[in-house]
Image 1: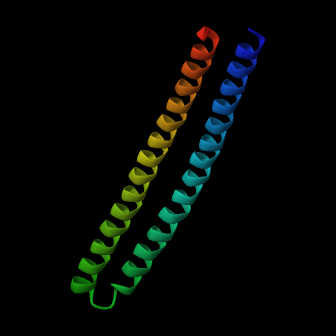
Image 2 (image 1 turned 135 degrees about the vertical axis):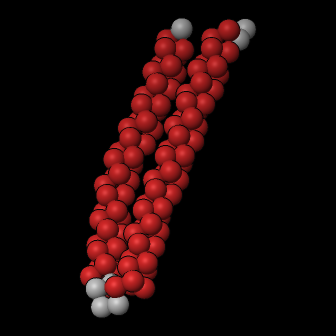
Length: 109
C-alpha cells in the first residue's frame, strides 16, 4: 500500500512539473508573439511612410503588407495554441497511464 501511495505521489508530481513547464512555455511564447506583432506593425508603418511618394501604387503595397503581417502573426498564434494543446493532452495521457499502472500494481497478486 505504501508503494502505491508513493507511486501515485510521484505520478502526480511528474504531471504537475510537466504542466508547469508547459505553462511557462505558453507565457514565453505569448511574449515572443507580442514582439513579432510589434515587428510586423513597425514594418507595415514603414511601408506606409514609403508609400507617400507614389501614393496610389504604394498604398496598395502598404495595405498588402499590413494584411500579410496580421496573417503571419495570427498563423503563428494558432500554431502555438495547437502545439500547446497537444502537449497538454500528452501530459494528461502520461498522467492517466501512470495512474492506471499504479492501480494495476496495487491489484496485482
